Length: 83
Image: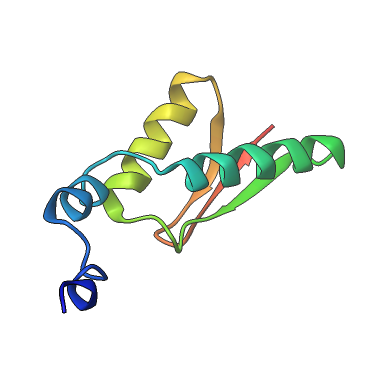
């Protein structure tokens, strides 16, 4: 019977996800998007934010800004980065 309840995530996992921390898969997604745009000689990279919560979006913008990227456009659904 305990196995049925194992599917419910722990509170700490949910709380962590709701904070500003980016998941490993989100970081890999942003990395591969930027690399792919660079390899294709594009001047911008489009990042879809559907899998990001609002706090993670803020964190991503902070990280990108700290790394020297300029945002060409920003909405609640996506970010376009100048390369």
